[in-house]
Image (cartoon, rainbow, N blue to C red; front, top):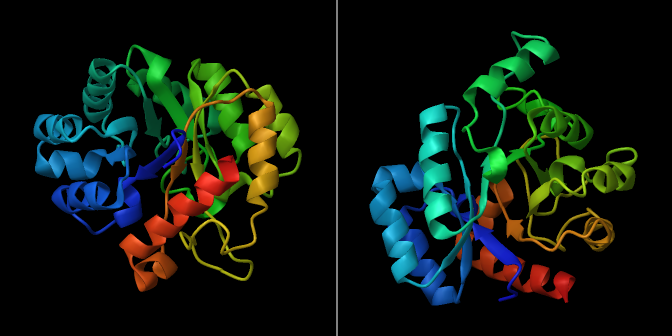
Length: 246
């Protein structure tokens, strides 16, 4: 497994923390993005101790919800582990304008924003975020002085993507990778990298040109993943992303 590849626990959405841990050992997965939802269900401190004992590196926390106290708890764990990204969505922005939404989010973030990476989402996920393009997410990160998580599946077709990534060069803290097939009209509906139509090689080259040398986290969700099964899709995804990173 490439040292810059990580597997998100979201990729095995319905598995428990114990299921994930057993699979990671079986598949030789050495770096993961932990689901705060699953860790909370298991017991956050116990879950982190089990991961450390297994020798698995933690690149980030995802599924952090919208409760600031949970963000602070996850940030504290990352600090103890020596680093990693706290990947957050902004929370819904349907009742406030942009400026008011930014002001509200500023009051909720952990005091130390060094680990915070705001994820871009798509317009169908306004329930999760008001940062609905990568360009908006970079604007937001500049205003809040935090990092950016580049969710490739949600931004690969944006106009001026290379320019946006170049502008964000000093703020890119994390990258999430998956694929998508043209013709799908639902979200999320991801597929294994290489099975879809996103020009991942070109996008990765553009990201690498910014100087980014961090993790590419495999995050697979949706009906096509459920239909094939978590273990085969994750195994294939790791092999494909390994190849893409050379």
